[in-house]
Length: 376
Ligand SMILES: *Cc1c(COP(=O)(O)O)cnc(C)c1O
Image (tube, rainbow, N blue to C red):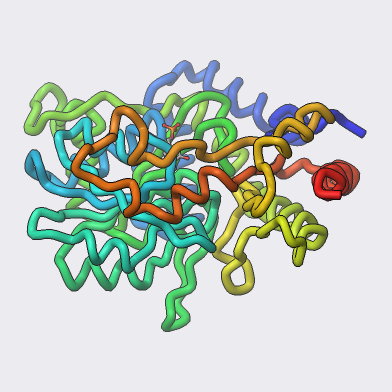
């Protein structure tokens, strides 16, 4: 059996080597390393795939979040509600822009922001909500969009972990995550479901006016060269990365299918186990693309399980070990940790198992039997 990895980018590369090399050579030959034709071609492919009017490529997912938020033109001190259980980038960009991150608790089944907690946190200063489609599963967007309408708030989706996931609205209409709110931000970090061979990101929106403004922001605030109408940033997707992403986008649905298959195989072994809670899969699993396969370990010692697996050369991850409200950078002495019973519990219980498109049945079977052995 091949050595198990959390993400196996090398094996994935072996299947697309020729296409990647051909595209990269084209970039070298054309020597358009910044904003070359490959960036535009990839952008068009993404717009097509996501069925969204505008994809604005940028340097990474964190930039995509920041630039999206800049697009809302908020005032210092305005409040932005987001999840207490996410990667720090989500809250980081709020604080960087001198806005106030308001963290709220999550749903214990989906690990996604709890719409009831969002509504409770809304004040007269609230201007936006950032739902995170954590681990690849779409957040409760029907409720979130309803709240946004009711209270006149912007919605920025953090879609870094869920590219390719589909949301089915209660009226039966379907759309890709990241295209449901005013704007979506995504990341092409190598380990993400659509990963480059370096950094990359994109902003997604159906709003023409916002797209026009955001295109200026990513390019030093210029609508016209050397005329700076607004304060912007420099955030570009490298042409070489675009040429790689253009190849990989063709396989994204296949990669996501493989992840789902692996997740279903894991869950078949673990379901009904007294110490394990398997990921909650909404509907026909069409809204979950399993960026991570994350179990909850209950009435047992999660950290001992981590050691047990590592000793047997099975990698695993704890996403995330600390709730954002307890991170030093984001602690607010006026906020009581007791407001976050779910995240406080999850950080002690979650464990993510290897998850990627190249996992073999042998590997999954070895991982599952080792996990089950730990509890015997
Ligand atoms: C990866 C990630 C980001 C940041 O993306 P980068 O490309 O690494 O900047 C933001 N939010 C979430 C939830 C992520 O998982």
